[in-house]
Image 1 (spheres, rainbow, N blue to C red):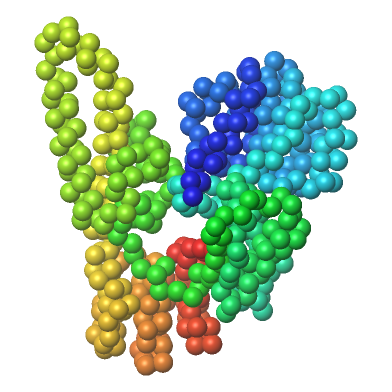
Image 2: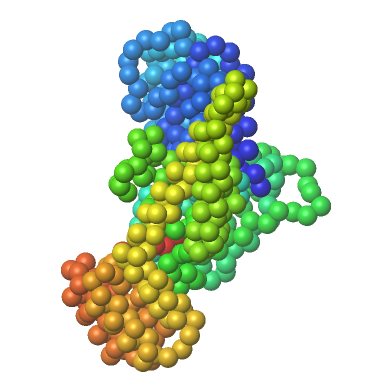
Amino acid sequence: MVLISLTRDYIGRMLQDISGMKVLVLDSHTVSIVSVVYSQSMLLQKEVYLVELVDSMSKESMMHLKAVYFLRPTLENIQHLRRQLTNPRFGEYHLFFSNILKTNQIQVLADSDEQEVVQQVQEFYADFVAIDPYHFTLNMNMNHIYMFPAVIDPPSSQNFCDRIVDAIAAVFLALKRRPVVRYQRTSDIAKKVAQETAKLMYEQESGLFDFRRTEISPLLLVIDRRDDPVTPLLNQWTYQAMVHELIGIQDNKVDLRNIGKVPKDQQEVVLSSEQDLFFKANMYENFGDLGMNIKRMVDEFQQVAKSNQNIQTIEDMAKFVDNYPEYRKMQGNVSKHVAMVTEMSRIVEEQKLMSVSQIEQELACNGGQGAAFEAVTSLLNNEGVSDVDCLRLVMLYALRYEKESPVQLMQLFNKLASRSAKYKSGVIWSNSSLNKQVLTRELVICTVIVTF
């Protein structure tokens, strides 16, 4: 799958077929969808001179601009459009939706376009944030609610299910495939998502998904993240995962404003495998190998910098000017990666993550309850270890030794509670009937990644 190419192609098609100066109008979801695949310079090349959000637009008339709307087909967005079409600000309106429009939504738009400013209405199936060619996310806030047991299933969980089904449908519509759907039988969540996806593809919108069959049908496998409670509790040691865990990545952007003296133009950097060859080559490298590769990159840059300093002739000067944009790009890339690796090294040292990770691996892979209890207790007494890492260690211990050492486990609970009021007794519990999953609000929000 080449999700970035698919999304970029959709956006390119909606912009290049409309000549003249344009304003691009997005919503809170599609702004992320566009930002990960299209830069500002690329938008300018398509004659997009203004970007606005549909729910916070000014009232200034700009009849010289053509408005290109790219929105999710939600009730809120349809209502925003209805009001804006009643009193149009732009000369033309070109409406593109990231997923399937309902018939009644089309009727509302048609009734609102009394001045006949709408030139086209199309569905472009890019209802997902393509963070790299093979992975996408939905940036769903509070999605941990959907992982709660059915007995406390809140009404809003249906909204989460609908959003997941919409995104899966958009992915396969973009790929022009209808998959065979399989799901994890032991999971009610996986079953619900799979059944509603299959109903959409094979019943409600069967004509839309009636693509030419391939020799081997694609497979959609829906599994439950909770069947592996251990992996999300372990510290990660590959480049992309460490940046995400220790610094934070949002829509392929990393905020570096709080990590010391960083040049103004480097305070928010893009970390994308599509735009950064070094990151593409090293995103799955472990921390040790990454350090060596960073040093190699710095050495190469120093050699280039020295050669640029040795300008003696007009030809040398002309060559330097020709290569200057590439030189500046290389300089910025080196600065970006050195800054991130330096910050991660500081965090690893400050939070004792090497020691923490060693105990995590022993809890996950090795035996020895007595030694494990002593090791976890020692780290709980170390003020340098963060509260979240202490929580993870106790939870790993609970998963491994819940039945074997309940007394020692309670001692760890009390020790954790003495570190922070957030972890008072009762916040953490374990239950073998829940597949020995340890559920806490802090864990689910901070470390559990829902993967479907």
